[in-house]
Image 1 (tube, rainbow, N blue to C red):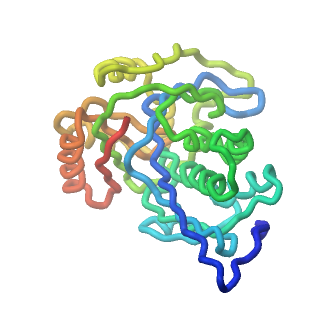
Image 2: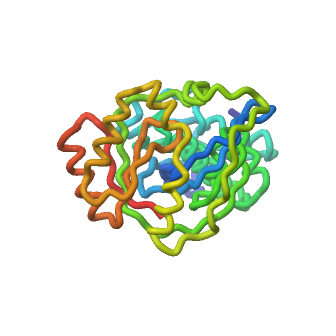
Length: 303
């Protein structure tokens, strides 16, 4: 990673302020696999929203370029070249001449390999921090290009608002969503995204179905639930085939009072339950924690 091109502060210069960005969990409320493109990527259509649960990425513009890990999930990660924060930095550096790069500290709170875009959200947060300190506009095309080159979920995490995500993740259309209470449950079992997609058995160039786009906005929770009823997550059956214990996660959520919808997010293994408000979600989370204290359970909001 290149060293910052800005001059080091002198003894009389004030220290550069540390900055921070939240990296919220990405939730695939629906996820339709439409086929597989000639380039090998799967063609998707997904209604995406962002939860209150998040990692946090701190940034010291004057620090030595690199990444430090902290938080309850730090032990599950390693500072390696394929870390998405470092990859995002490399991709933006390749597109912005003289990009100044400092040191990141990732407070890892979301589970890894969990279908809620933790690594992608972290990468998007890194891009936002670099944009702030290098005078780049949030809609600078190079930001989007770096995000897509980093990973398919990074552009939607950079966008950071409820939207319809299509293609491999490059086509984003804003969608207005009402607020729900949300419970996220992960059994601390990683499910490999590539293995889940392989279970679909699609060859490059193969189309399997088409779906209508959602409306650009939902006025009520009932409208959202009605839409989602006919739009499942196509990756849930193959993920369950690979890891049958995921059925217990879905059953635990389905057994909570006042739950409106239970579904897997992304390629798993995180499941979510939707509730009318955060109080119902909090009560549900307590029940699941009491039954399975070994699982990662988070009560939050979405929309």
